[in-house]
Length: 363
Image (tube, rainbow, N blue to C red; front, side, top):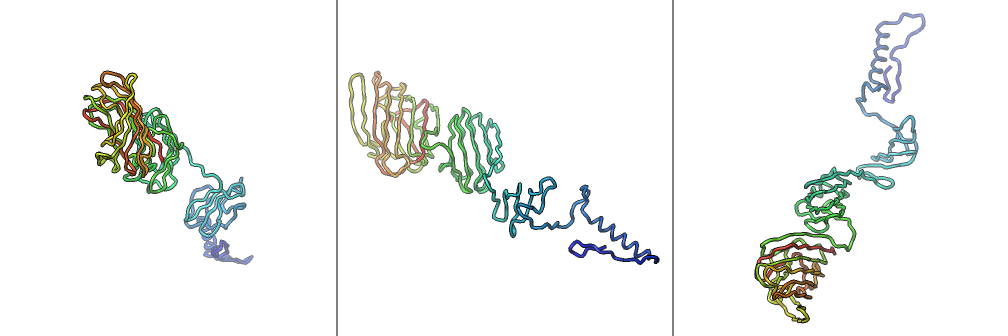
């Protein structure tokens, strides 16, 4: 009863009625039947196929591989080298060597987890939402490994989270990104770098520090920010002025030429208001002679920071100078029309101490 290559079987030996059957021929028939039964696919799953199982091409309406209770749902051959999947007689998706094509919205499974420390996001975290409950660094696996379309959401629950891409890769155009406390950022990979999805034109916290006995406070990697806001309450060991300088080489050096800046300083002391303009080597962000060990509180807005234009700064502050509370209103900036990417806060004479925060708007 051998098959002919198309699945049709035939009997090896035939016999005539009322004749003696040759035992060898009878045994050959039974052996052939047993062999074909052995090489058949048992319905109870005792054995599997030992060769490919060819199917008809099928269609979306009548798939080649289907289910007894749902005959218009299954798998079919859509075209040469292309496999389709259908449901209720309609194509759901198909795939080939180019990739997977889904009809309708592609839904990624959401994986929620709470993190209490630093973590490296992996390819398996695609679509994940991780809530960070302690200050941490979220490192990113190489973009080429994660692939285009990979995405990951960070919830900073009352803490700040630093996003640190692999090597020289960037996230949102920066080498690192601070996720402010009580905010959420979605990261999307394009296969080479990372982008972020968040509300536009809003302030984001870049960094918060509390310094002690330092000569200067430097903020680097600011090339993604068009506008900056710096706020602080600082003291110095010596009487003098708090000033700021900018950098175009990410802090390798800071602009300190004799006329790199321009400023107009207005000081209100009691009922007396005085003003003066100058082109110094650094821009004042305080009275020119804040008393030693006395706090100076200030808020400074800097415009055009990463633009190829003059940097414009506006400072408002108050503190003690000459044992008297004074208020300062200062306008100015860096004169050269060159994009900046780092900022330094310093004192003209002594060391600095106190809290300071820098925020920014990208652009």
